[in-house]
Amino acid sequence: MPQQPVVLDPASNDRHAEHQVLRARGPAARVVILGVDAWAVTSPTLLRELLNSDYVSKDGRRHWPEFDRAVRDWPLALWVAVENMFTAYGGDHRRLRRLVAPALTARKVAPLTAHIEQLVHGLLDELDRTAPSEPVDLRDRFAYPLSIEVISHLMGLPADQQQPFRRCVDAVFSTTLTAEQEDANAAALYGILDALITNKRRRPGDDLTSHLIAARDVEGDGSALSEGELRDTLLLMVSAGYETTVNVIDQAVTALLVHPAQRLHIRNGRATWEDVVEETLRLEPAAKHMPLRFALRDISLPGGQVIAKGDAILASFAAANRHPNWYERPDEFDITRAAQDHLAFGHGVHFCLGAPLARLEVATALRALFERFPDLRLATPAEQLRPLASLISNGHREVPVFLHAAA
Image (cartoon, rainbow, N blue to C red):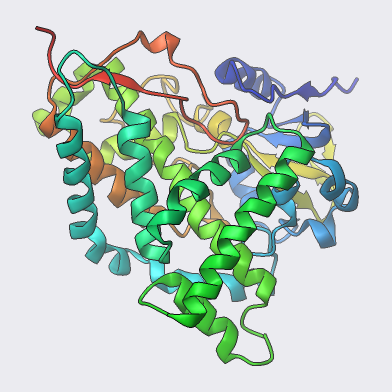
């Protein structure tokens, strides 16, 4: 008999236990996410197949029968209603991705190293002025400002708009707001984006926003980028490039402080800071679940279950990355792990374009942080760190630390 769907906890209070329940139900499990029925795919093998297939779409307008109802009253409506490469399918996806991809290759990102290092050391200088006995929230004082400064530099977001944008993006990733609160937040978010577009049309610069505006405006017939696609592509680039990087820095610092023996591997040359980044992405990916994809045909599962044509699919990256059939000791943090084929950045045609920038940014931040503060330690027990109230964003509400050794 079909099992009752798992109603996902909007606040994600015990995510690992919930993911274990999902994995126990097979490669995919029926779930309810904020009132919407979906299939949570936790098998990494099946997930890779679906992420790279042409019979699974991200275009809800064309391929999800529930789309009209969802955009009216679903708190996560923005995740399926935006018009950018995140929700595009086929030729539209290839067209939109081609506009952004050249700016985010590893070769293009490498020159940002000096700028990122300058930002990191400036933030560390500020932290170093903290009294030794005073705890510091590294998420708020280090991960957040670094990530928002880097993406603002890339996109040309003015300094006076960074904090309002941060608040709006945090709300986008929350899964505890009402539909009305989400609508109000979306209006504020688009207000910031429209102001950015207006400013860059008047005074273009050497940034990705100006590049995208040029791609939109030079093609008079709108074939390169519609006005809606321009706004939503900017939304995707700034929000994805900011929130996810914050989470990876947060989780990497936490893991290293909970497992100090792992830092010895770096000191003794058995692992690198890049290895820390990859193992953090596997163990605690920046996004737990990623809404939504849609089946273009019936998909048969082991045991006789079927993801029917039109059904919504939830990519459950965090559960898949700890699947026991994929990794040995999947719940252990081990930076010497040889296999680094996690799914934290997705897979296939929707693989995250920002992966090179995120990897560079996090590795640079961690290296400098632990070199400056070798006695860094948590100011509260790890089990008391509070997770973000989100089914999507995977981080802590705060990461309080002491920067120096106890007197």
